Image (cartoon, rainbow over all chains, first blue to last red; front, side):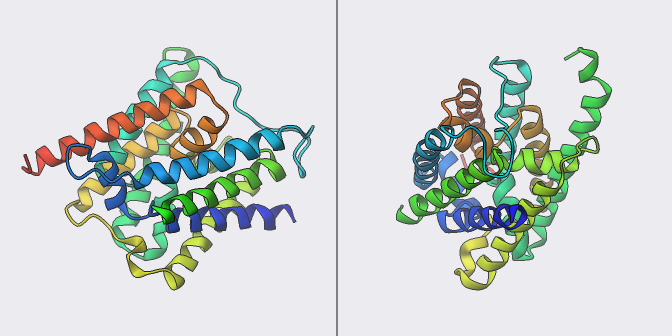
Length: 143
Length: 138
């Protein structure tokens, strides 16, 4: 049951990305292109998602625990460190460059277009590089 | 614009289901990144979710308009490789992407996520601008 619901949430998430236009990089690019013909549709996606989730979040957290687990797994970090700032900037550079973020990139693999495969292949390489660097350097407290 | 809001709401509902049933934040970069982390033990729910994403993609492929997967023609294969690497590395370093920080984090009124979202939208705007300069559009 847990597997089925998690799977279904993934399907719903992908459909949301597709219907909202997030899997169309030109819409994302249009949002970043404030100096050209600004396309504000992406703002609608974020507002729609945030309004729904912000309300649901507050109702759900009245529960002592989620339905299938013993506790909620919420981020606990509060400080604005260099990793957060640097990571967000690096992510934005890539996002603005090709107009694809991780979710739409994965969903769009089903287009069969080799360019989405190149994007996800490079994304996975970037993630593995991060894991490698983190194991080697970050834990020694140098960053 | 209606499509954007309806699609966004579906994303919000999916994220709420993940919280209600599994108690998890629906951050795509986190889910994929942890799935790829050899030290992670709890891999099953991440696989189910990623399979769901791919299955949703399959539904879109067969039931949505073909332009649902339209791609930027002015972006080369090399650009996609560069962009993909930056997105993969940056999202793990910054602990989140558009879904984890932009949707889930802002919904929780997290200061870290608000700052991260402001930063990645700003650097996205900067990046799109530089891209046009590189292509000689200015």
